[in-house]
Length: 188
Image 1 (tube, rainbow, N blue to C red):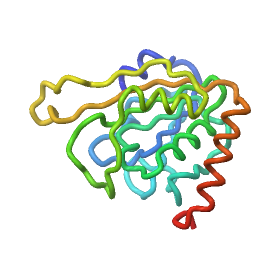
Image 2 (spheres, rainbow, N blue to C red; image 1 turned 180 degrees about the vertical axis):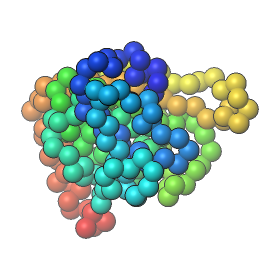
Image 3 (cartoon, rainbow, N blue to C red; image 1 turned 90 degrees about the vertical axis):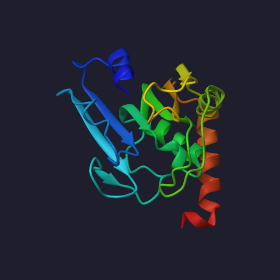
């Protein structure tokens, strides 16, 4: 996340940043996004360190459409049952031209918090870009084990996406997902 911030963001520009899954379990991205010109908002399902907004659903963000310059999520998507719904919400709140930084595990042991559903690869990120009708600017996966023995079993897929001007296809996909979700019994 530090590398992405340094590569893609200008510390002198005013930015509205939203972090999805911001609860500080073992570190926070908040310190990376600490420019005085940046407004950082952490959202998660539980109150705690790093959380500014507590969500009642991972699939509905109480944030205005097209209001964020950067939406990010790190090490959270593997815990979200229907991550594609959260993905569409992330794109909904992103301004046209805004960036989305996404980091999710490509490998690693099960770590239920409260569940552990998914692992991600570059083709999965390409599929997310297709679903959201956005540009996949950059993607890579940590294929080699980390030098630190305590982290060697973990690997991530890192992606940068850019939201395009909303197309009819993206709006229809978002509507279809919302409609399907509203019919799902656990959404109540």
